[in-house]
Length: 502
Image (tube, rainbow, N blue to C red; front, side):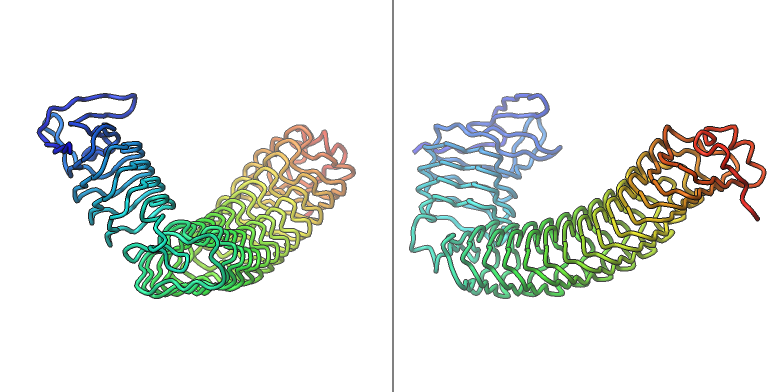
């Protein structure tokens, strides 16, 4: 058997790519991934035995070998064994896919992540050990290996290895009790197990990788053990029957889309210590009526409660700094919202299409309000804007058809186009003293009766800034009447400009 022993003092062949540096030592090619690190990126497909070192040298510089790269040993069909030095941290996607003669692999205790399909279709691979250092196992890592295909290795339709739950058969049904001493559940382990109803997770489990229970459409109730500190991305996404989840106080992170489209979920208590509601965490939870956010929350992420159509009220904790884009978009039952005076930023379309929202008070801590934040809030009748904002954004109140009056704070300098488009019942507008420009089509209303402008200098106005001024009266500060009459304002309010009565 041919044996390749690679020396770090071997002759080096250097290849410089467009944006990458590669070099070959013996039968392995390495790629520089950091100033002092390389990964194995290619192997001579004729070899049958390989040793991967922990260090290589090129031009008198040492590089640590930290990863087996994407497809590095793919289709090395003569490879029987591979010895990997301690120091490798990552085995990347499809690293050894289709090494059909590979029977054994030594995974060192330095490895922390094994990525998708790393050993997929290694049909002879039976002997390997998953060290305790591994914290993330992606899907199909050992798919169609000899170990995977040996039914004696499965326990009640679940495949385990070294206290790691690798995958469940999609035909698993009813209740699944995960074995005691299991420490890790792999990525997408139970994905689309559509007949799984109950899952019993022991306290020994400390890691549940992303998407582990995604699209388990019959799963109804989950108690997450206190050994868990992180609910990962898409963990319960699409679990449409899930109506009860107990999250322990030990949890500090809840990932992107963790409960997205859990349409039967009605309530949730987020434990203290969680600092952020991530992107789309509860997006599409159409039955969610009650959620308790802890005082530790600092930000509410993009689309976090997108189209939670049954959510009636939510208390945003004191301490929250930012509410990101579309956080409450389409929450048609949301009738009240309390924005604490710690919030500084409200993103694009945060409350758009909240059809039941009637009143909003935005504290003076808010300095930035995005475009279309209250667009199509059809029942909104009262708004108190922050005195700290300087721009009224595009479509900010578009189609707020029941909004009857608005006061633009003195700090505002600019009103964007269509800010109040289709506000057909807006009758009274007060424009603050700091406004410098009002863009085209900013105010679109059929029922305008009174406009008060508090600026001594007439703000610049764009084409059809007041689309239907009708018979509205413009009131201006004393001493500024002639300036307004000589400005573009007179095009809209000729003969109807008067000074404010003291």
